[in-house]
Image 1 (cartoon, rainbow, N blue to C red):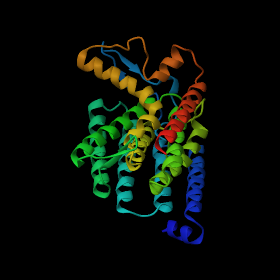
Image 2 (cartoon, helix red, strand yellow; image 1 turned 60 degrees about the vertical axis):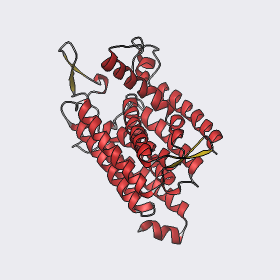
Image 3 (cartoon, rainbow, N blue to C red; image 1 turned 180 degrees about the vertical axis):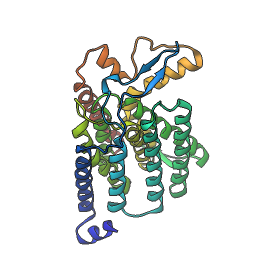
Image 4 (cartoon, rainbow, N blue to C red; image 1 turned 30 degrees about the horizontal axis):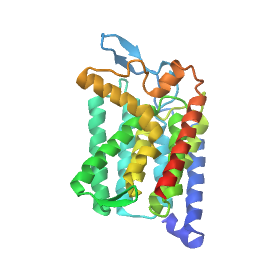
Length: 324
Protein backbone atom coordinates (compact mmCIF):
# COMPACT_ATOMS: atom_id res chain seq x y z
CA UNK A 1 0.00 0.00 0.00
CA UNK A 2 1.24 3.49 -0.86
CA UNK A 3 0.62 4.61 2.72
CA UNK A 4 3.11 2.09 4.12
CA UNK A 5 5.80 3.03 1.60
CA UNK A 6 5.47 6.77 2.27
CA UNK A 7 5.39 6.23 6.03
CA UNK A 8 8.54 4.11 5.91
CA UNK A 9 10.31 6.42 3.45
CA UNK A 10 9.20 9.82 4.71
CA UNK A 11 6.62 10.15 7.49
CA UNK A 12 2.94 9.73 8.16
CA UNK A 13 2.42 13.49 7.94
CA UNK A 14 4.15 13.60 4.57
CA UNK A 15 1.66 11.05 3.25
CA UNK A 16 -1.22 13.15 4.52
CA UNK A 17 -0.08 16.31 2.75
CA UNK A 18 0.81 14.43 -0.44
CA UNK A 19 -2.67 12.87 -0.45
CA UNK A 20 -4.34 16.21 0.28
CA UNK A 21 -2.46 17.96 -2.51
CA UNK A 22 -3.06 15.04 -4.87
CA UNK A 23 -6.79 15.12 -4.12
CA UNK A 24 -6.90 18.87 -4.69
CA UNK A 25 -5.12 18.69 -8.05
CA UNK A 26 -7.08 15.70 -9.33
CA UNK A 27 -10.42 17.26 -8.36
CA UNK A 28 -9.44 20.65 -9.79
CA UNK A 29 -8.54 19.24 -13.19
CA UNK A 30 -11.59 16.97 -13.32
CA UNK A 31 -13.94 19.88 -12.57
CA UNK A 32 -12.33 22.23 -15.10
CA UNK A 33 -14.37 20.43 -17.75
CA UNK A 34 -17.06 18.47 -15.91
CA UNK A 35 -18.04 15.11 -17.36
CA UNK A 36 -20.86 15.31 -19.88
CA UNK A 37 -22.86 12.61 -18.13
CA UNK A 38 -23.34 14.84 -15.07
CA UNK A 39 -26.89 16.23 -14.81
CA UNK A 40 -27.89 19.85 -15.22
CA UNK A 41 -29.66 21.65 -12.42
CA UNK A 42 -33.00 23.37 -12.90
CA UNK A 43 -34.75 20.57 -14.72
CA UNK A 44 -36.47 19.20 -11.65
CA UNK A 45 -40.09 20.01 -11.06
CA UNK A 46 -42.20 19.63 -7.96
CA UNK A 47 -45.93 19.78 -7.39
CA UNK A 48 -47.16 22.36 -4.90
CA UNK A 49 -50.04 21.64 -2.46
CA UNK A 50 -52.46 23.50 -4.75
CA UNK A 51 -51.58 21.22 -7.65
CA UNK A 52 -49.27 23.54 -9.61
CA UNK A 53 -46.01 22.28 -11.08
CA UNK A 54 -43.05 24.57 -10.48
CA UNK A 55 -39.35 24.50 -11.30
CA UNK A 56 -37.05 24.49 -8.29
CA UNK A 57 -33.59 26.10 -8.12
CA UNK A 58 -34.49 28.32 -11.06
CA UNK A 59 -31.42 30.55 -10.67
CA UNK A 60 -29.15 27.51 -10.95
CA UNK A 61 -30.82 26.41 -14.16
CA UNK A 62 -28.34 24.83 -16.56
CA UNK A 63 -25.43 24.50 -14.14
CA UNK A 64 -23.71 21.16 -13.84
CA UNK A 65 -24.78 19.44 -10.64
CA UNK A 66 -24.00 16.13 -8.99
CA UNK A 67 -20.26 16.92 -9.02
CA UNK A 68 -20.12 15.43 -5.54
CA UNK A 69 -19.74 12.09 -7.28
CA UNK A 70 -16.45 13.40 -8.71
CA UNK A 71 -14.81 14.91 -5.63
CA UNK A 72 -16.12 12.27 -3.22
CA UNK A 73 -14.72 9.52 -5.46
CA UNK A 74 -11.35 11.28 -5.49
CA UNK A 75 -11.51 11.66 -1.71
CA UNK A 76 -12.27 7.96 -1.22
CA UNK A 77 -9.40 7.05 -3.54
CA UNK A 78 -7.00 9.26 -1.57
CA UNK A 79 -8.24 7.67 1.66
CA UNK A 80 -7.51 4.18 0.33
CA UNK A 81 -4.03 5.20 -0.80
CA UNK A 82 -2.90 7.44 2.04
CA UNK A 83 -4.55 6.09 5.20
CA UNK A 84 -3.69 2.92 7.13
CA UNK A 85 -5.74 -0.12 6.18
CA UNK A 86 -8.38 -1.50 8.54
CA UNK A 87 -11.61 -3.38 8.00
CA UNK A 88 -13.53 -0.62 9.77
CA UNK A 89 -12.11 1.90 7.32
CA UNK A 90 -13.07 -0.33 4.39
CA UNK A 91 -16.67 -0.55 5.62
CA UNK A 92 -16.89 3.20 6.18
CA UNK A 93 -15.51 3.92 2.72
CA UNK A 94 -18.12 1.59 1.23
CA UNK A 95 -20.89 3.31 3.20
CA UNK A 96 -19.73 6.75 2.06
CA UNK A 97 -19.65 5.48 -1.51
CA UNK A 98 -23.22 4.23 -1.06
CA UNK A 99 -24.29 7.60 0.37
CA UNK A 100 -22.65 9.31 -2.61
CA UNK A 101 -24.32 7.03 -5.17
CA UNK A 102 -27.81 7.34 -3.69
CA UNK A 103 -27.38 11.12 -3.62
CA UNK A 104 -26.19 11.17 -7.22
CA UNK A 105 -29.12 9.07 -8.41
CA UNK A 106 -31.43 11.67 -6.87
CA UNK A 107 -29.42 14.45 -8.54
CA UNK A 108 -29.72 12.72 -11.91
CA UNK A 109 -33.42 11.89 -11.69
CA UNK A 110 -35.83 14.00 -13.74
CA UNK A 111 -38.08 14.41 -10.70
CA UNK A 112 -36.86 14.66 -7.09
CA UNK A 113 -37.04 11.51 -5.02
CA UNK A 114 -39.72 11.53 -2.35
CA UNK A 115 -38.85 12.47 1.21
CA UNK A 116 -39.85 9.01 2.43
CA UNK A 117 -37.52 7.17 0.06
CA UNK A 118 -34.55 9.42 0.82
CA UNK A 119 -35.25 9.23 4.54
CA UNK A 120 -35.38 5.44 4.47
CA UNK A 121 -32.14 5.18 2.49
CA UNK A 122 -30.42 7.52 4.94
CA UNK A 123 -31.78 5.46 7.83
CA UNK A 124 -30.46 2.17 6.41
CA UNK A 125 -27.00 3.63 5.84
CA UNK A 126 -26.99 5.23 9.30
CA UNK A 127 -27.91 1.91 10.95
CA UNK A 128 -25.14 0.14 9.03
CA UNK A 129 -22.63 2.82 10.05
CA UNK A 130 -23.48 2.53 13.74
CA UNK A 131 -23.27 -1.28 13.59
CA UNK A 132 -19.81 -0.97 12.03
CA UNK A 133 -18.75 1.53 14.69
CA UNK A 134 -19.91 -0.65 17.58
CA UNK A 135 -18.17 -3.71 16.11
CA UNK A 136 -14.79 -1.95 16.34
CA UNK A 137 -15.26 0.63 19.11
CA UNK A 138 -16.75 0.81 22.59
CA UNK A 139 -19.94 2.66 23.45
CA UNK A 140 -18.13 4.71 26.11
CA UNK A 141 -18.43 8.46 25.65
CA UNK A 142 -17.13 11.56 27.39
CA UNK A 143 -19.60 14.33 28.15
CA UNK A 144 -18.09 17.56 29.46
CA UNK A 145 -15.08 15.71 30.84
CA UNK A 146 -17.05 12.94 32.52
CA UNK A 147 -16.89 9.40 31.07
CA UNK A 148 -20.17 7.53 30.60
CA UNK A 149 -20.87 4.00 29.47
CA UNK A 150 -23.87 3.82 27.17
CA UNK A 151 -25.50 0.42 26.57
CA UNK A 152 -24.77 -0.47 22.92
CA UNK A 153 -28.48 -0.43 22.02
CA UNK A 154 -28.96 3.07 23.44
CA UNK A 155 -25.74 4.28 21.78
CA UNK A 156 -26.95 2.74 18.54
CA UNK A 157 -30.28 4.57 18.62
CA UNK A 158 -28.64 7.91 19.42
CA UNK A 159 -25.90 7.30 16.85
CA UNK A 160 -28.39 6.57 14.09
CA UNK A 161 -30.30 9.75 14.97
CA UNK A 162 -27.08 11.78 14.89
CA UNK A 163 -25.97 10.45 11.51
CA UNK A 164 -29.43 10.86 9.99
CA UNK A 165 -29.71 14.39 11.35
CA UNK A 166 -26.22 15.38 10.22
CA UNK A 167 -26.83 14.12 6.68
CA UNK A 168 -30.10 16.00 6.36
CA UNK A 169 -29.16 19.35 7.90
CA UNK A 170 -26.00 19.43 5.78
CA UNK A 171 -28.01 18.62 2.68
CA UNK A 172 -30.54 21.37 3.47
CA UNK A 173 -27.73 23.92 3.85
CA UNK A 174 -26.42 23.34 0.33
CA UNK A 175 -28.35 26.11 -1.36
CA UNK A 176 -25.95 29.04 -1.65
CA UNK A 177 -22.71 29.13 -3.61
CA UNK A 178 -19.76 28.19 -1.43
CA UNK A 179 -21.74 27.67 1.78
CA UNK A 180 -21.69 23.91 2.32
CA UNK A 181 -18.14 23.44 1.08
CA UNK A 182 -16.55 26.27 3.09
CA UNK A 183 -18.31 25.54 6.39
CA UNK A 184 -17.51 21.82 6.18
CA UNK A 185 -13.83 22.58 5.53
CA UNK A 186 -13.74 24.71 8.69
CA UNK A 187 -15.38 21.92 10.70
CA UNK A 188 -13.06 19.19 9.44
CA UNK A 189 -9.97 21.28 10.11
CA UNK A 190 -11.40 21.88 13.59
CA UNK A 191 -11.74 18.15 14.22
CA UNK A 192 -8.15 17.64 13.09
CA UNK A 193 -6.85 20.39 15.36
CA UNK A 194 -8.67 19.10 18.42
CA UNK A 195 -8.62 15.32 17.99
CA UNK A 196 -5.67 14.39 15.78
CA UNK A 197 -4.11 12.48 18.68
CA UNK A 198 -7.38 10.83 19.71
CA UNK A 199 -8.47 9.61 16.27
CA UNK A 200 -5.40 10.09 14.02
CA UNK A 201 -6.78 8.11 11.08
CA UNK A 202 -10.20 9.77 10.91
CA UNK A 203 -8.84 13.24 11.68
CA UNK A 204 -6.50 12.81 8.71
CA UNK A 205 -9.38 11.53 6.64
CA UNK A 206 -11.11 14.85 7.28
CA UNK A 207 -8.07 16.72 5.97
CA UNK A 208 -8.07 14.59 2.80
CA UNK A 209 -11.72 15.59 2.36
CA UNK A 210 -10.71 19.25 2.76
CA UNK A 211 -8.31 18.89 -0.16
CA UNK A 212 -11.03 17.94 -2.63
CA UNK A 213 -13.51 20.43 -1.16
CA UNK A 214 -11.13 23.35 -1.62
CA UNK A 215 -10.72 22.35 -5.27
CA UNK A 216 -14.52 22.18 -5.60
CA UNK A 217 -14.85 25.63 -4.03
CA UNK A 218 -12.67 27.03 -6.80
CA UNK A 219 -15.63 26.38 -9.12
CA UNK A 220 -18.49 26.76 -6.64
CA UNK A 221 -17.73 30.20 -5.18
CA UNK A 222 -20.19 32.81 -6.37
CA UNK A 223 -20.94 32.95 -9.23
CA UNK A 224 -20.69 29.16 -9.26
CA UNK A 225 -20.07 27.03 -12.31
CA UNK A 226 -20.83 23.67 -10.72
CA UNK A 227 -22.93 22.34 -7.83
CA UNK A 228 -22.19 19.36 -5.58
CA UNK A 229 -25.76 18.10 -5.36
CA UNK A 230 -26.91 15.47 -2.88
CA UNK A 231 -23.96 13.28 -3.89
CA UNK A 232 -21.66 15.72 -2.12
CA UNK A 233 -23.70 17.30 0.68
CA UNK A 234 -25.06 14.04 2.07
CA UNK A 235 -21.61 12.45 2.13
CA UNK A 236 -20.22 15.50 3.92
CA UNK A 237 -22.93 15.20 6.57
CA UNK A 238 -22.10 11.51 7.01
CA UNK A 239 -18.41 12.32 7.40
CA UNK A 240 -19.04 15.01 10.03
CA UNK A 241 -21.11 12.57 12.11
CA UNK A 242 -18.41 9.92 11.75
CA UNK A 243 -15.80 12.35 13.07
CA UNK A 244 -17.98 13.21 16.07
CA UNK A 245 -18.46 9.55 16.95
CA UNK A 246 -14.78 8.66 16.66
CA UNK A 247 -13.76 11.67 18.75
CA UNK A 248 -15.32 10.01 21.80
CA UNK A 249 -17.21 13.28 22.43
CA UNK A 250 -20.32 12.84 20.26
CA UNK A 251 -21.99 15.96 21.68
CA UNK A 252 -19.25 18.03 20.09
CA UNK A 253 -21.22 17.84 16.86
CA UNK A 254 -23.56 20.43 18.38
CA UNK A 255 -20.71 22.94 18.05
CA UNK A 256 -18.73 21.54 15.13
CA UNK A 257 -21.84 21.45 12.91
CA UNK A 258 -23.78 24.27 14.57
CA UNK A 259 -24.03 26.34 11.38
CA UNK A 260 -25.54 23.38 9.53
CA UNK A 261 -27.81 22.52 12.47
CA UNK A 262 -29.15 26.07 12.58
CA UNK A 263 -29.34 26.76 8.85
CA UNK A 264 -30.76 23.42 7.73
CA UNK A 265 -32.24 22.18 11.00
CA UNK A 266 -34.72 25.03 11.37
CA UNK A 267 -36.29 23.96 8.10
CA UNK A 268 -36.59 20.34 9.22
CA UNK A 269 -38.21 21.44 12.49
CA UNK A 270 -40.58 23.73 10.60
CA UNK A 271 -41.57 20.89 8.27
CA UNK A 272 -42.05 18.39 11.12
CA UNK A 273 -44.26 20.76 13.12
CA UNK A 274 -46.30 21.56 10.06
CA UNK A 275 -46.76 17.91 9.07
CA UNK A 276 -47.47 16.52 12.55
CA UNK A 277 -49.22 19.37 14.38
CA UNK A 278 -50.26 21.60 11.46
CA UNK A 279 -48.50 24.39 13.33
CA UNK A 280 -45.95 26.74 11.84
CA UNK A 281 -44.27 29.01 14.42
CA UNK A 282 -41.66 29.98 11.82
CA UNK A 283 -44.10 31.25 9.21
CA UNK A 284 -42.22 34.56 8.89
CA UNK A 285 -38.83 32.88 8.51
CA UNK A 286 -37.71 31.51 5.16
CA UNK A 287 -35.91 28.19 5.43
CA UNK A 288 -33.18 27.15 5.10
CA UNK A 289 -32.13 30.30 6.91
CA UNK A 290 -29.66 31.27 4.17
CA UNK A 291 -32.74 31.92 2.00
CA UNK A 292 -34.02 34.34 4.65
CA UNK A 293 -30.66 36.13 4.62
CA UNK A 294 -30.65 36.30 0.85
CA UNK A 295 -34.28 37.24 0.16
CA UNK A 296 -35.46 39.09 3.26
CA UNK A 297 -32.21 40.66 4.44
CA UNK A 298 -30.98 41.20 0.86
CA UNK A 299 -27.47 39.99 1.73
CA UNK A 300 -25.14 39.51 -1.24
CA UNK A 301 -24.74 35.81 -2.00
CA UNK A 302 -20.95 35.85 -1.69
CA UNK A 303 -21.19 37.25 1.85
CA UNK A 304 -23.37 34.45 3.25
CA UNK A 305 -20.69 31.71 3.26
CA UNK A 306 -18.22 34.25 4.66
CA UNK A 307 -20.54 35.03 7.59
CA UNK A 308 -21.39 31.38 8.25
CA UNK A 309 -17.77 30.33 7.82
CA UNK A 310 -16.61 32.92 10.34
CA UNK A 311 -19.30 31.78 12.78
CA UNK A 312 -18.18 28.16 12.38
CA UNK A 313 -14.59 29.20 13.15
CA UNK A 314 -15.86 30.73 16.41
CA UNK A 315 -17.79 27.56 17.25
CA UNK A 316 -14.72 25.41 16.56
CA UNK A 317 -12.64 27.60 18.87
CA UNK A 318 -15.31 27.21 21.54
CA UNK A 319 -15.16 23.44 21.08
CA UNK A 320 -11.38 23.55 21.38
CA UNK A 321 -11.63 25.44 24.69
CA UNK A 322 -14.21 23.00 26.03
CA UNK A 323 -12.86 19.66 24.85
CA UNK A 324 -9.07 19.96 25.00
